[in-house]
Every structure is written in C-alpha cells, then in structure tokens.
Image (cartoon, rainbow over all chains, first blue to last red; front, side, top):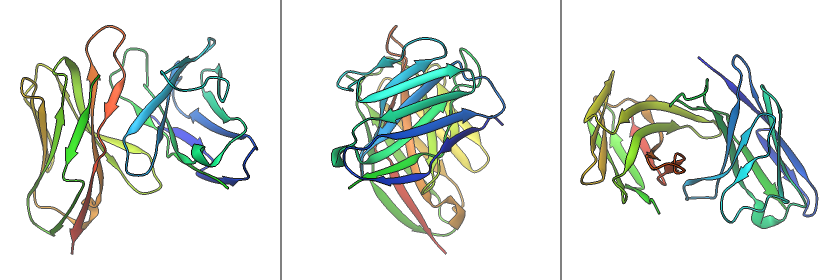
Length: 116
Length: 114
C-alpha cells in the first residue's frame, strides 16, 4: 500500500528556534497533503491543506506565518514551525490521499515536538 | 460545527472477550465515517470506512456500524487479542461543499490483558 514517510519522529528544541517537518510520499504522487496536530488527550485537528504548486489553505485560528507549508513537488511537503514556543509542543502528523478524489488517506508516522 | 465524541476514553478487557467502542457525532450531514487505529509513536492506520448510505462494514474480526440519523457509530471487535491494544479513533467527513475535512474524535485507548 501507499506509504507516507514523515521525519523526524521526534524533536526537542529551544524556544525561538525553527523546526522543519518533512512528509514524503514514497510510491505515489501526493497532490494534496493534510497537516494535523494533536495535543495530549485531544483530537487530531486539521491545521492546513497543501496542494502541490499552490499556496496552502489554513484552518481558522492557525497562523500561516508561524506554520509555513511548502509543497513544491508531488512527493514532498514540509511544515516549518517558526520561532517555536512551548505552547507549540504537540504531535504533528501529515496525511495524503493516494490519488485525487480518493476517500482513503495514508498517514505519516507523526512528529512529537517538544519546545523547551 | 461538527463535534465527535468517543466513549469510553480508555478500556481494558481480558484477552478473548468481545468489545464495543462507541463514537457519536453532532452533525448527521456526513459523507462517510472512518475508524482508525493509532499505535504509540506511529501513524494512523485506516481500519474501516462506512459511506453515509451504508449501515455497516466488516473486516475480519472488526465490524463497524453507522446510524447516521442518530449520529452514532460502533466498532465491534470480536475475540480480542493483545495485538489489538492501541488507540482507536473515529473520524467523520462532512458532506457539505467546503466541509470535506475529517473531524476526529478524541479516541479510545484500548488495552487487552493477556
């Protein structure tokens, strides 16, 4: 089946630094990538939707200048948390449909971000 | 705004027992409902997808039902095994244009006791 590779699995950083999370589709072209975050004991919440070659669409309340999304190729989407602060500590996970219009979603393994 | 609730938040049962996980949603205008499994430190694995026009789906020891009008779904796991231990999430996809995103529940953390 389709695989989405997400790196890193976990990262610890100092407050004020930027962190980049990568998601690669290994055996399909991901024209769309969904980015979610999950705080402890809470639901996965959609942050933004990225489409290859165009600007990402952000959900209400998500700062686009803080969470930079790049989807420059059909196999790679990145999320950069800029000037991270402790409140950004969360589990970030990406997902992509294997083809346009598919109802299935394949998820990355997630990234646990801890900001000190 | 769609809200998805899962009860219980955690469940422990002895190996071999059958069990039911519950999911409820507030807006019945859904396109489909999915059940996922989430293992610690790993991504989500899709278990079952039920279209809004369907009432149930089965895969192996898993059976998911959907009652759209009452806003409820259940995931039935038969003859539970220790390998079933994980967090189970349900998610609904909205059917209204511009509302196609998935809304997840908070999950049920299942522990199967050997």
